[in-house]
Structure formats: structure tokens, C-alpha cells
Length: 117
Length: 114
Image (cartoon, rainbow over all chains, first blue to last red; front, side, top):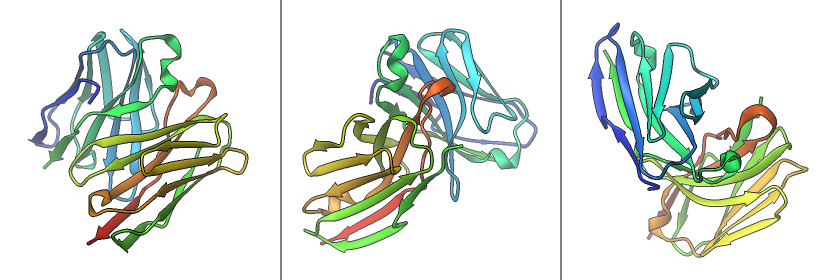
């Protein structure tokens, strides 16, 4: 929905390797978010972006970095993957292009299931 | 930090029943509140967004109410169907410098049996 594509859908990687997850949107939405979902914790915000090259940390940002060099792509990188980063990762967007569109409905991608062995 | 609680954690009902899902949050300074459903292994689907100035929002068989001052929202599902089986999540949206960040509860897992 809202033209959001996450890739890959599934990934298995080894501890210590870098991993990059991609979120692609087709409708020039300004605000993009990365969440992780874990049993017992619900959804937690990792990083978010409020424009090209404008990003900020969420509540669980340690061990993660993000980049947004184009409006349509928001990349999440695990610098050196650890087993605690095994999770389902969701990208989300706030519908709209304006500065106040952060208050618009949030729409989610289908998620990436990451397993770190 | 905003804390969100959803009660009950799980609910199992026969088809046709009218349901009430409860959501409470600790910080009443919110812009709006969004309800989602999540099917197993899937992403979140937006159901309703209710603004802080609104009391109710309706979509089909769903009705969400918001009492901002008391930090509560309720999702009513009328005439439940097996296809309503999913996890329902509420998420108030913070104000100020949080740039629209949503805070999520752990959800209510709903099962509707035929």
C-alpha cells in the first residue's frame, strides 16, 4: 500500500556482517520511518527521515544507521549484525509531501524478516 | 515517554458479536491516534485515524472513540466476522519535537470463530 516496497523480504546473515535493508516508495512522501517488531516489545522506532539527507534517531537506534539520498529510498544499515538484531523490520511513510504531513496516516510496508546467526 | 496499554491482550468470540477493544496512553498531549490491524506474517493495515479534536471516527463496521483528556481510545467492531481475526494495534501520535512519531501498544489478538 501507498507504493511502499521493502527488500529483501527475508534475509539470513552471520554475526558481524554488515546488512542493508531498503525501503522504496513511489509517491514522494516526505516522512519515512524504520521500525522493528519483536515479541514482547511491540513496534519500536529505529530512525526516521523528514527529507532528503534529513534523518534522526528513534528509541532503539544503537547499532543502526540510515541514509536517504533520494526522496524515494530510505536505507537501514546494520553496521555489524548481532543476534539481538534478529527481528522483523518495517518501513513506514506518512502520507503527503508537505512539512506537516508527519501527522498524516502512517502506512507500512510488508516487512523484512532478518535472522542473524 | 508515552506508554500504551491495550486490553484485553487476547479475545476469542463467536461470529456476530459486537466487540470492544481498549487502548490507554499515559501522555494526553497527542495530535491524533491511529488504529491498525496486523495479520500473521504481514505488515500493518491502517484502519482509522482519529484527530485529537474529534470524539469519534467511523469506517464501515468499525468505530473509534477518543477521550484525549483521560488518555483512552476504544475500537468498536460491530457484527464480527471470521475475517476480522487479526491483531489490533493502537498508536497515539506524539506532539512537539517528535515529528509525528507513533507509540505502539502490544495489541489485542482477536479470534472470531464461525
